[in-house]
Length: 388
Image (tube, rainbow, N blue to C red; front, side, top):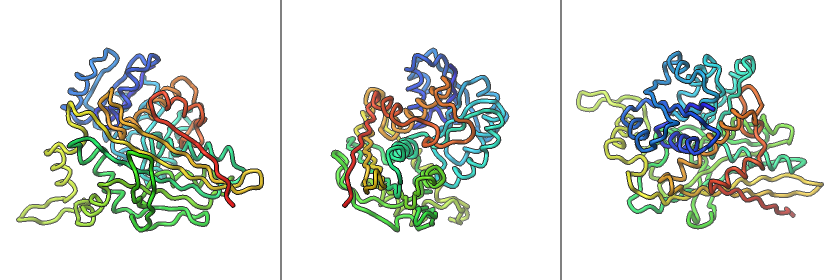
């Protein structure tokens, strides 16, 4: 089994690679990344005969297709802006595809490629990480238990307890997009745009995350849930996230650091976001430094309200994402990279047979996948409450 990982030296991609290297069913892992220095450093750390590397610019569709040709599956772990480019490369190469999400708007564009993937009998599994990904499977599991699924509410909380931990464990650019783009919620069965942070809710997460204020932001689940669960009469859905740092990131975005538009400064044209990202890189503020043992934790709740056997019920799913200290990796990395790489192996083994562009909730059987996640310490618990 040969699997390629693009963006494989990055945060989530490296976790996917690590999981594949340890999988006895995988014989070869092709790791492509635009950053040659990070690629070489990561490969030397792995020291695996399974791994081969190459500098890849995913904007060059033909070259990327040549790199992944002959693989069973390609995992796309690059910035979501390039999802469509990688999908075109997968089509050219005749390779199944998995990614970590398209932040709603790109996901909608990806779904338009369904006919092209179907015509080549290929699977494009979109949004197969943590959120989206495991959240989708929780909703799918709930739908299988309910006669009617009226509402899905997703609440996510993150806290880093690592001494002198990094400021960012997730793509700063994606976070900035979540801060400035309107969120999309489902109300009365219709998608509605609302400003980011315009809705909020206090949530008591288990320790060590604890009580956090969560805020509505743009997320990919809203791109697929309305169509996936239309037959269950889904009328309400939203996503909110919280962390101690999130309000500061929002303030930085409001000041203007999230803007890609160039401004004049002392005779120079500069993009505030590009300057900010360069400073983050120079100050080594993205990801855990070498030798640091991560101690960050994330909990996600998926609340599903519906009817079962003529009574109103609420199903509550609690997902625990712990750090992977054995791999020296953050929960933000493994929570995304482990689900995507696990699904990629399942596609290669023909355990996932859906063809076309499909979200997790229509392509995977949830319960068995939850068992696979538990083997990595990612725990999914479900409870049921009657509503009176």
